[in-house]
Image 1 (cartoon, rainbow, N blue to C red):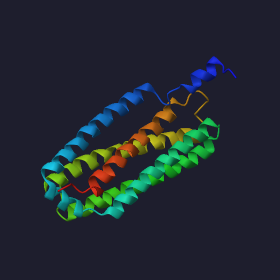
Image 2: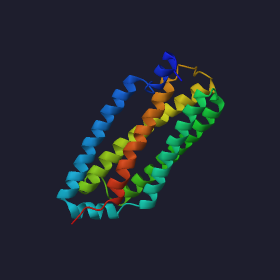
Image 3: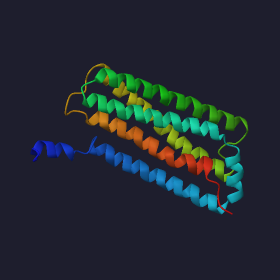
Image 4: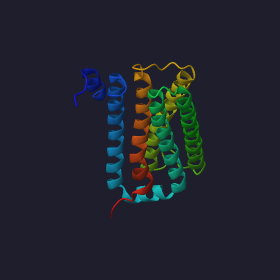
Length: 197
C-alpha cells in the first residue's frame, strides 16, 4: 500500500524546531565537558570523592530522579494529547509536570541547604567543587524547563496549539527531556558509582 507524499513527509518530520535541537546539542556538549572533568578528577583523587559521596543522601537523589522523570513522562503524554486535539487533558498533564518540577526544586534546595549547613560548600573539596558546579548548572536548567512547561501549560489552556503548529510544544518537551537525560547520567555518576581502587 503506497502512502501519499504528505504522509511520508510527516513520518520523517523531526519534532520541535531546528534551533532547539542546536541549543540542546550545545548544552549537552557543555554537560559532557563537566561530566568528563568530574570523572577525571575522581580518578585523580579517589579518597576525596569517596568521602564526599558518603556525605550525600541517596534517598534524596532517588526522589530527585523520580520527580524529573515523572515530569518528563507527563510532558510527553501532553504532546500526544495535543496531537489528538485534547488540549484540556494536555493542560492537566502539564500542570502535573510543573508540580513535579517544583517538588524537584524544593528537594534540591533542601539538599543544598543541608550541605551548606554542614560546611560542605564549593571550596570544601574537589568533589564538592564539582558537585556544586555540575548540579547547580543542571538546577538552573530545571528552572528554565519549568518556565517553558508553564508557558506550554498557558498555551494549552488558551487552546493555542493548532494542527501543524506544534513546533513550540515539541521543542519545550524536548528541552525537558534533555534535562532528564543529563540527570540520568549525573545521578549514578555523582551519587552512586564509587571510584575504583
